Amino acid sequence: MQIKKLNKGLSSLLIVIICLIFNQKVAHAEEAIGFSVSPVFSEKQVDSDLGYFYLRTEPNTTQEVKVTIKSLREAPTIISVHVNDAVTNDNISVEYSNDTPELDDSLKNPLSELLEVKENEQEITVSNFEEKTVTLTLSLPKDPFSGIKLGGIRFIEQSQEDESEGLTNRYGYTVGVMLTQDNEPFNEGADLQLDGVGAKLNRGMKVVYATLQNPEPKLLGGLTIDANVYKKGENKPLLSESKQQLSVAPNSSFSYFIPWGIEDLRAGTYELRMTATSGENSWEWTESFDVGAKEADEINAQAMNRLTLSGTLKIGILFLGILTIGLTLYRMIRLKKEN
Image 1 (cartoon, one colour):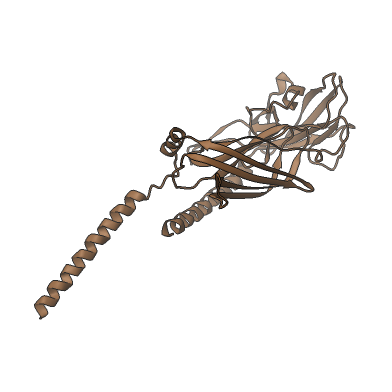
Image 2 (image 1 turned 90 degrees about the horizontal axis):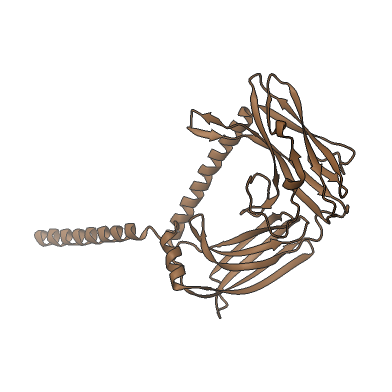
């Protein structure tokens, strides 16, 4: 019980420290970034009140996509421009910043293959508060698509060395791009499928994972996932994890992690019971999985979240034992002398 309280206290302190560092870095980024970007909407824009591109498209056509870059300082700023596809990250939110994502098998003709940055504009230099317009070419295949294509145009300031911290900082912006042809709602019709369950290490931590896929070209938002892991044949959960307000990119897969904790992973047969809800949609799965003895030993040996306090506790207990015996002998000798 004391160990749990200690770990909880250390975790809370660590979170506070990380938040303070993160907040400082965000403020630093806002001060250091040397440019801003603004989308230039055409007649193909579905809603001009949005801060991103939501474009009507037609098969076998091309159109230009333009973004204005404005310098915010006198010194030159070199900016790289490229297109990324939307994926679902480990936090189960839609991400556009992954330059080399592993795309889902259900995603055909991703945005990164349709939207091209001109070769002479893949690197732009702006200075002295000037403005420049970057023009990208959007080329649609001859076959129509349903749903949406989703991604973003990334504008990244060339890396700078932060001499005060010895770090390389990259600052930039992402302008979202969403394509439609059928003009159907982009957030209706998503699905979730369970593709795999097991145990592994995630960033050094022991976890049970469930791989989920949204195979539809639709966004899934407002998602809640509740998961429980049981020893096979038992009704008392060993592990529980619940997350709310999650979002899943179209045609993407992700892993839902249930932390195992500091105890060793034990070989055996387990059962995952999981539910997911989004609006009026709901999904439910029950899946058994095995953890072999060799697999458990390998995971435990490589895990960062092992019970590392055991050695310290043993030394502490030994010290307290010796101290208790010493004090007892001292009192006995003192009482003997007084008598």
